[in-house]
Length: 245
Image (cartoon, rainbow, N blue to C red; front, side, top):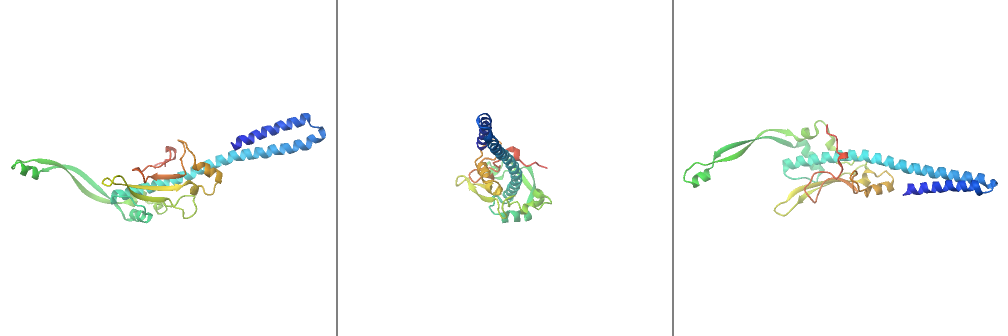
């Protein structure tokens, strides 16, 4: 709307210049024309900067969001590993980092086997009955760190929001949802857009917090997981998905 308004003013100013040239006395034409052309230049500059700042902001936010999402994915993968080994999620980065450094995945082998069903055999007077069972053998253990991060130490800083003020971390929560006898573990990690874009123009940040589009990250935060339902995906469109190596 601001850009449209400036363009309208520029057109009106051009019209005024034409009127001056046609109807105003010659001795007044020169100073008035110069003033109006200066006004046109100034308004044109502000129009250009409005468009340029929007484009610049869009590029900056995309770059920053991409790095934020990479860290959220690391947090999600670490939480899933934590749950696989310990049975639930954690809301503590200290616990998560310690687990990555010391935790291990069990490499298991499952095989089906047939064994004597002693209870059923006894119940039917000695007639032999069998049943199918699955035998689970633990073959080895693999460090969680090697599986998730290989030689990288980025898990030590995955809690820090990129481009935010120093010390700003993703909000991390963990808990349970569901009925009392059917509780399921959940977690959520959140980065607020105002923190990611804290050094950008406030009006553009405010506008970004209320964006609603299938091609954008809607709302005022980038998040992964949920404290209200069982899910481990993020709230961003596929265009932001990290490229897997």
